[in-house]
Length: 314
Image 1 (tube, rainbow, N blue to C red):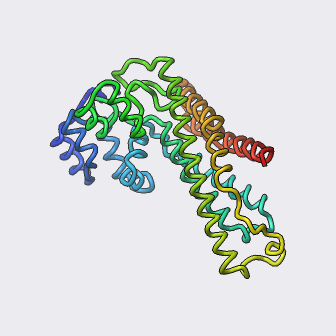
Image 2: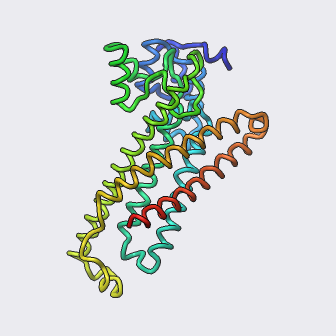
Image 3: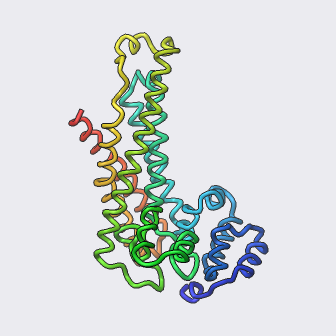
């Protein structure tokens, strides 16, 4: 509740609470506690999450970015799982169907496509999701370090370079402002849409370039040193040239930074509306089901749209 959010614990108090719970206080949370106090409600959720074990505890310990979003939204891990594994399942079905009898002849492309899907979806959903406010000010440890050195416009610019949005800009268009901060302005919400779209486009192009490059390298090695691994029919028709590298990566980046970016922001807005409704609050499983349906449907529609778009270009 609000009273819990206004309660802060010092470094000694936070350390003692973690020791009592049998967990270790992470370094970044310790620095926030030293600098301005750690929100007691967040610390309690962190201890409970770490003590709960399982995948959530492991991700909480290994990835601070995922941890902070799980602390803000208890349903974040579910949404992340649906987005990642739902798209993996669709990708596997699509790859098997499209490659058909040539599946094992093109296994390297299948593997890199699936790995790229996992990395990209997990990163995009994490980037656009709201982080918990650990202390008295949003931003966490890195923002505290920046605030100690610079201020004003330069500080905001450094946050942009460091992939951290300014305090007065939401992580996604429909995100709610943290407690204690003024509501986000329409201009900052539009800026978030554009800024995150640019980040997603750059990330997608980079992941696509790396994945296609790795697949092309493995393909060249197979053709040179293990041609007997191909089926007779495939070996007789295979092109001597590797698939294009730059063009599909750029096309994928543009598609993800525009269409996929807009759809992810819309989904997060609809999720917020559903979870905040009287029905969603009364029946949380209904909100989770709605979230899953939207995310799986979005992946199906998005995959078809990109396939048609690339097919026209090809």
